[in-house]
Amino acid sequence: MRIDIITVLPEILESPFSHSIIKRAQEKGLAEIHIHNLRDFSDDKHRRVDDYSFGKGAGMVMAIQPIEKAIESLKAKRNYNEIIFTTPDGGVFNQKEANNLSMMGNIIILCGHYKGIDQRIRDFYITKEISVGDYVLTGGELAAAIITDAVVRLIPGVLSDETSALTDSFQDNLLSPPVYTRPAEYKGMKVPEILLSGNDKLVDDWKQEQAIERTKELRPDLYKKYLED
Image (cartoon, rainbow, N blue to C red):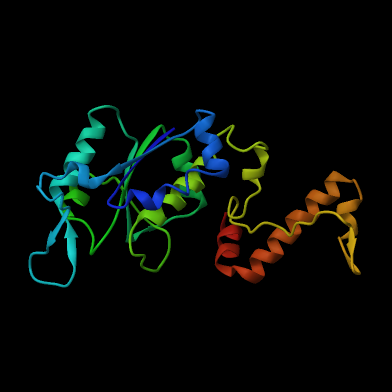
């Protein structure tokens, strides 16, 4: 899988992709992550990528020219399944979306900034708009990092135990059950006996019951979706 990220602040994305699971995914050749500085595509002699908005209004707008040039330069080399724009008014990112994106070959993520991008880019180039929550960030770089992390870890072979991703929270509109490790007792606090029983069927049933109860208590909105499915 190849992910191309277009940003005005590439430095922000250096660390998230240089460690842990995402780094190993790239070393294994399972994922390619390429960061592109939008300023490199600007025709302005000062490499500006923003301008004032028509119709007044506070804040600057990301200009159409450098974005169009960046996207077209990438599209000239390969086909893309999705061209994603990170924006507060996009559809809220979730596990189902991450699953869908993880099965694609190539995607572009355009990081929003300032007051947004020229609407013509959204109209003619963007195929999917994604928000990571009902709040506003200073830029779309952190959103791009979240999307990339959530997607790449789902690619087969990235996690050492591929069943781990299948038991993550939200996979079935349920939160994960509580987890425990050694020692079985610590200062009077004990691990539930059923987890020490060695009976896989009972353990699986217990985990499912706990997942349902936790979701019902902590995320009634998800629990409703679980019941509907």
